[in-house]
Amino acid sequence: ASVTVDQKQVSAIGPGTLALVGLHHEDTESDLQFCANRLLKIKLWENDNGAPWRQHIKQKGYEMLCVSQFTLYGTLSKKNQPDYKLAMKNVEAREMYNKFLDMLRDDYEPSKIFDGKFGEMMDVGLVNDGPVTMVIDSREGMISTQTSSMSLSDSDKNT
Image 1 (cartoon, one colour):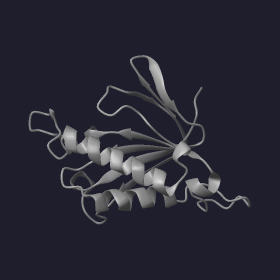
Image 2: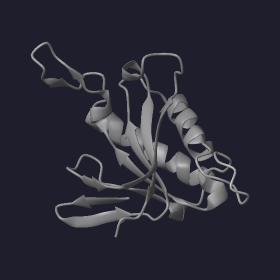
Image 3: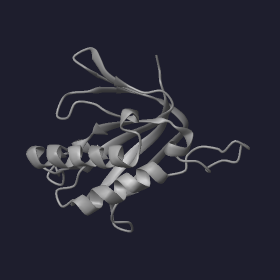
Image 4: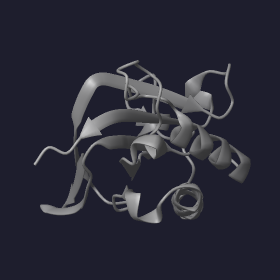
């Protein structure tokens, strides 16, 4: 997976996870911690014996690329126009997103956690292996457009 801004690659990973991170306007640090823990512990890969869904990113030693994605909380108005009122506002979202990255780095190898450029127009490239796409929601059982969630894809470097 990779992120390009203004035709310059700013991040790229090999095998690992691409996490699209959306922050809801009501999210707290507890929501971030829940999602960071789940993201690092989700078992997406087979073990050495070939049994599927047995190992997480830390066991495999893989990398993670996080991309801030406020549009995950987009809804459509009656005029079919995008509305992002459920997404956290820019200044607070930047602070919370950086805290989220710190949480991941504190619980894993900091050199294996990458990100794009917050608030920039990013081109995100990925090879969706499987494909596997999951939503991690800090308020399980609630509608995902009203809760903290992240989409992630098992990916390989495409260069």
